[in-house]
Image 1 (cartoon, helix red, strand yellow):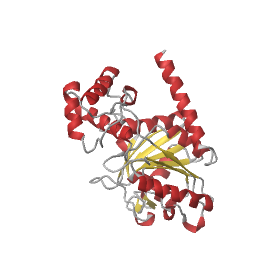
Image 2 (cartoon, rainbow, N blue to C red):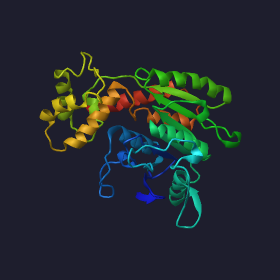
Image 3 (tube, helix red, strand yellow):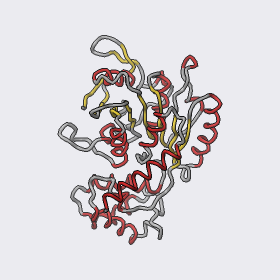
Image 4 (tube, one colour):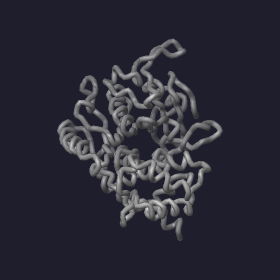
Length: 328
């Protein structure tokens, strides 16, 4: 379903037997439409690989997925000031003549329309969206768990009005490329423990560029994915282990020039966006990732009491088993 509600683009999808609701908040230069592939209902949807993984993992666990685009459509970031001053949270007057906070009001409307009110509500966000979901939890007591990716962790963000307990919060970050934010999270986790806030971290490390990684893009087939890996290796963009040598954002023009003759110009814009995101994931610097979503949701379902490392190992084992079945 796609609608404009309270001036914000809102998309959502409900599985047959919903067990919860997951609000997903995009990062800067992105939108709600990144979580769904192009369709008749949403021709402008992009279905970026990692956003797609987040949505599919949530749906597979029974979560209705709700995505909302930020008010700022120029920089496409969330207004991450204090929750009560954010234009994405502030009060608006609805056609029904009553006032409601913008994003909290939208979420409550979708939940009511889909009759999901008795189910837990969790929030996922990356970068600007990660900061926003922390602020959303301050303004919206219905939020029962947070997945905050690639975002600074400050104790001031982990407080609710009236001394209400802050919900379980999982920080997902890329420590090797962003040691400053990693240090913040390391300092914040003991604060959370002291305040009784269930909190944990997932560290995303660099990984080799493989055909399997690239095949998380629905725009690529195996022959294209293998051709991309070969072209990147031949062009010197990968080291002998298949790892990206330099920041793919800074070297975008060069790697795109190396891939264009291999892939051709048909559908190039969409392919280039997908490959760019996946190179960012492989390089592990400030990129939304979907691979830990299943484990993250399981951790929230346990109220933050489970071992996130054990849940990640279990999810990895399941993924490898599925891959072996597919290649059998």
